[in-house]
Length: 147
Image (cartoon, rainbow, N blue to C red; front, top):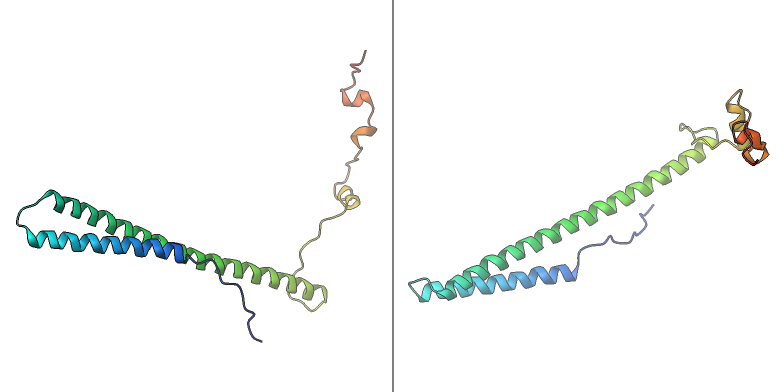
């Protein structure tokens, strides 16, 4: 039997990839600018410090955004696997309960909730009386406060 096609899980897509690529392009531009400034001059200038700062910042941003996108992708895959597993478990439990009712099953069916009449029979010696049927004296501990 062919496996049914399932919808694809959420994957971090074009927007995340755009920001990672944009940060990578800026980082590459700052690296090139820093390299050109270092090769052209012998002493450290303010432009080299600015280029170095931009290089460090944009490289870190690109790495952080790339790691975030990878984590989102892994989380989306794990979430899809958990959802698939839960569906499989619930389907198997449903099928097993149906097989158990047929008499040939090896699985004990889920217990059903007892009705109201069965609950009272489960607790011997307990007489249930609704609150609205009690007298005013029983509600107030034997004292009538309406005097």
